Amino acid sequence: MVADRRDTENLVIDALLYQNDRMYTQALDTPGSDADALDEQALELRFLARVDAEQKIEPKDWMPARYRNTLIRQISQHAHSEIVGMLPEGNWITRAPSLKRKAILIAKVQDEGGHGAYLYSAAETLGVSRDQLIDQLLSGKAKYSSIFNYPTPTWADVGAIGWLVDGAAIMNQIPLCRCSYGPYARAMVRVCREESFHQRQGYDLMLQLAQGTAEQKKMAQTALDRWWWPALMMFGPSDANSTHSAESTRWKIKRFSNDELRQKFVDFTVPQAEFLGLTIPDPLLRWNEPAQRYDFGPIDWSEFEQVLKGNGPCNAERLAARRDAHAQGAWVREAASAYAEKRKHHAG
Ligand SMILES: [Fe+2]
Ligand SMILES: [Fe+2]
Image 1 (cartoon, rainbow, N blue to C red):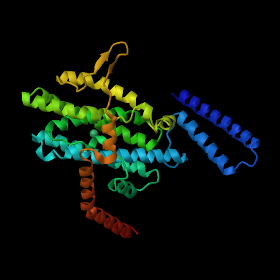
Image 2 (tube, rainbow, N blue to C red):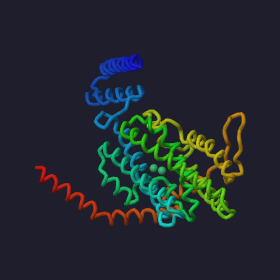
Image 3 (tube, rainbow, N blue to C red):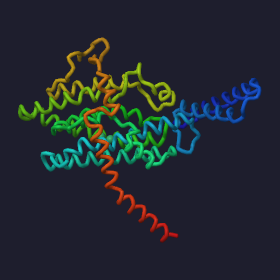
Image 4 (cartoon, rainbow, N blue to C red):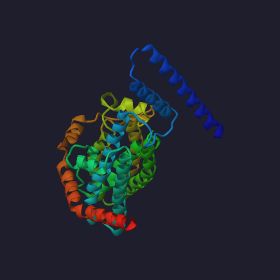
């Protein structure tokens, strides 16, 4: 282990020396080159060498502005998704069918709030304030995962969300545990552990319904029909239409493409649906023996676009709920600030 690490360090040092040499030779070749621009370029090369060597980039390290902005966008969208994601299921806390299910659901929704809090903190390490991020969400400027703009009309939707939405989230987030930005990667480790509990409680709920009365089984099937395609859309546009992918892959923020992750999710989930005795609502879904994967039908991207533009079934309702909660929580924030101020005076 120690020898391996020394080797990696030596490789990085060599890469840096080589790159520095090249920088200076190029500088000599380019009359009138700007020293600042040169510094910037050298810093970027060193940054890329560190990313290549799988070293974590930390908040105080130099990083390209585009890397910083990509992370702020991605981490804050992720944080908003966790917080807005509390709403569709939170809707069922008062109506959960048993005390046990209520306790599980409260814990799950509370976990999502915690995920939002970790992620806002991770975004703040990049020099953006939480107030700015919350403003962006409440003004409708920031995006969050389009999946949370779908309604939860029955109790089975709570199961379908845990099974499919948290299942898709795990697929997306496990590779993020190895993301090049340290605070994001570390937040993801704990988040993924909790997501796996969420996925299992959702599957357990679906299993109970699927093995219940004919009416309960139908409820589970209808929920699967509602959530299947939106869950596939959670992986984002197909690779051919994905705008941010190439740079994010270069920077090791992204490890797999949208289509690769979507395929993994389908391959993982289809046998689970079979075990439940439920039918995935896709007539084109079939096992492809030579490729060892499931082929599936085309995704209706026009629906995805509409939800992203704010025209999904619950976009307005979700934002209104967040704005209300923010307004109603103003006194708590003020009280906490006043208390912190008072403590500071006492300490001083
Ligand atoms: Fe979460
Ligand atoms: Fe979750």
